[in-house]
Structure formats: C-alpha cells, structure tokens
Amino acid sequence: MLVLGDAHAIDPARRRALFAAYRAADESVAVQCGDLEYYDLPVPTHFVAGNNEDFDVVDALRHGRVRSRDVENAHLLAGDAVDVEGVRVAGLSGNYAPTQYDKPRSALVGERRRHFVRADVERAKALDDVDVLLTHQAPHGTPVMEEYDVGCRHVDDLLAALSPDLCLVGHHHEHTESTVGDTRVVTVAPVWESYYTLDPGTLALTRHETPDA
Image 1 (cartoon, rainbow, N blue to C red):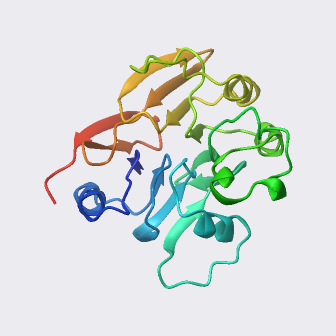
Image 2: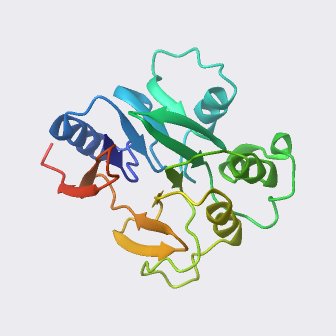
C-alpha cells in the first residue's frame, strides 16, 4: 500500500507532487498522515486530519455527511480503525492542545476543530488488534529536529494501550525512526520529497523519492 506524509495539496505545486506520488507508486489504496488539504483523490485513501485541513470537509467526513463532487476516495480515521489489505490501520486525527483536550468535540469551533479531545483518544484506546497507527502528533522520544519537545503523553498512552507494530507520524516534514516500547515509530517525510510503500505481509516500509510532477 502507498504511505503518504504531509501533502498541503491546497497549493497547486504540492498537489502536483501528491498526484506524482500516486502515479509512481501505482498502488490501489493509500494511507496518509495529515495536512492533506485536498480530498478528490485517485484511489481510496485513509487519512488522519492534521492541523491544516478544510475542517468543514473533515467534519462532514467525520459524520458521514459528504455531499460534494470535490471529495472522492478520502476516508477519515478519527479514533477508529479499518482493515487495509489485511492490515488493521487505526488513526488519531488532530493535534494536542491542553486548553481543548477535556472539552466535548461539539465545543470546538473554527480552527479549534484541528485538535483531538479526550473522547477521541479513549475511543482509539478501546480498539483491538491494531497493526499500524496513524497520527499527526508524535509520542515522546521522537528524534525530529524541532526547538520544542514534540512528545504528547496522550499519544504515549495510546501506543501503550494498542501496542501496534508500527506508528506513522506526520506534521514534522522529516523522516526519522525510533522505538517506543515494542512499536516502531516513523515520522514520514512530506510528499513533495518522498512517498513510501508498506508491505502488508511484513509491514516493511520502503521510502521512495517523489518524481517531478
């Protein structure tokens, strides 16, 4: 299956890179780690929402109320899971804000809809037999080059509860690899640099350079 990092495909050049990755991979299904920003896609794509999205579209996907020709093959993972080519893939959409975490989702308006809340995390914790977890928020110990501590204890707790074989993290526009407990954690490069393919049988992740659009 195809694995995609941040796309920011509202920008035409970034969108061309996104579609170049789809063409080069030639896979029938994809997963994506947030900041997609374009939702008319060539193959079924299971994604977590990032901090940069059209949150009206994300809300419509969350509630199953999409009625737009501009949304095709985009499937949101928000505290739930789906079987993709025999791999159980779960997703936690959004990023963490301590001032929003204990609110009901219905209280989040405007750009605040980009955050996850406690109910999202608790729903994800109750999932069974997860092989791969997608997030847009990193756990502690992620070796990205940022000037702040990127780790979130709620993602740590989610990894401890689910113990997936692999966690794929967006947001940081940087490829890194680390281990949290028994889970391999990979922050994925942005789509305009790289795309990845995931072997459903072994969960081996292979990085490829995205060709020119």
